Amino acid sequence: MKKVCFIIAYDISENNRLQRLQRLVSSQFLQLQYSVYYGTMTRKRMDAFIISMQKIIHPSDDDLRIYEVEPLENSFVIGKRSDDIMLFSDIGEITL
Image (cartoon, rainbow, N blue to C red; front, side):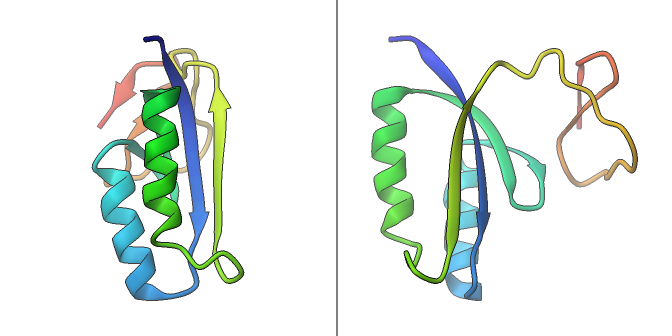
């Protein structure tokens, strides 16, 4: 099966749900910013992963967004860089 690239972004209003979701998402995706993650999965696996995330969030209090995107090999960062978050360099190389 073909893997697809996704970005997951969230805003969770309660700390326990935030920590649970952060552990789940960071187990499968790379952190781009504090609540923004990037990774690849098959669509079937992502469907199951979405169900796992839906079990954690509160649908009327929390905001969870999943975007299908192109591969980030050609991405770059402009501005402040953080050592504790995965970033892409100006030429698309991953820097950790």
